[in-house]
Length: 399
Image 1 (cartoon, rainbow, N blue to C red):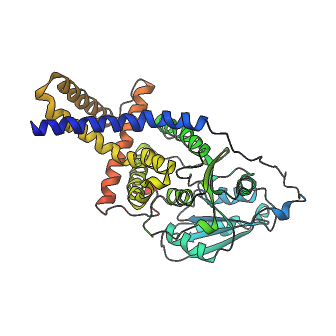
Image 2: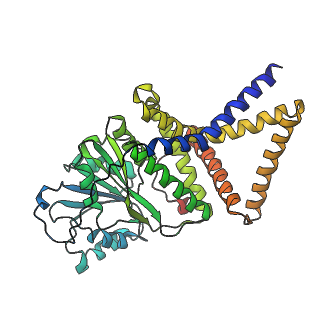
């Protein structure tokens, strides 16, 4: 009976964690955030015209690492040339990390266009490929700018992005700011629903001053808060912002301005991307385990509930299946639970194996969620076994 006792206990704990992570925590976060006043600064507009207070705006350095970005680099540079911020108060550092496609040639050609004549850009082209984190660490050692904006090549920025960052950082308690994020074209209905959900969560976290991770498309940080990262870091856009929160700074989400993601990937590449995120989740849960200490208060609770439990969810699902199979001979209720799980997972395998489309939106969202947990499991196992490292490889190239 001892094995059955432990089976029931494990099943109960996993079930409670599953319900807490997916339902109770989001509900509690929404309730708690609703009680907090919205602290959003007024976003000024210059209209590309000189203003009397231009000299008082902070200097901002835009850091943009790039590896084999020939598809998007031209549009990105033209987009940056449209940003509205005083001349002499910002510049772009483009880090070409050993590109082996035509990215470098495109950069040189596009920068000759008359429309880009005023773009304050410094191009650092390297022959060897050392990885995004290495180049960021290297660039930060040379930077003297008080504010840093990190942005992906595949994401276009609103023209007032730098002005918005300056407005937020006028508050000395703000350590990092993330722009909102939207997809030009979602790869699937599930992906679109996922990002809508993530946006709501980030809005609520921001109200509490504890935004857990920025969108890599566009986010900014005080230079003094940047801490050099190990070269194999996967989710730098999570570890650095939450590091600012751990130091007592507010980390906020500016969703009135949204970076536009141009890249669209297919279902196979999407799973590859989610595996990488899963590996990053496992890595950050381990490396930032000190944040679980009660001295971090609200941040510790949010980190445990939102991020650490995300890593544990696929293991909870597996344990629930194993426990119900173990307990099935003892009671019809456990047998029914085991049967429902087996049939559900078998149905999903059949749907994906035959490339079928589920008929109802709710089923498609559940499918996307479970596929996410599966990718999270594989990514976590890859990290734990040392197979997954931070790299430049794009999702479609991995696929």
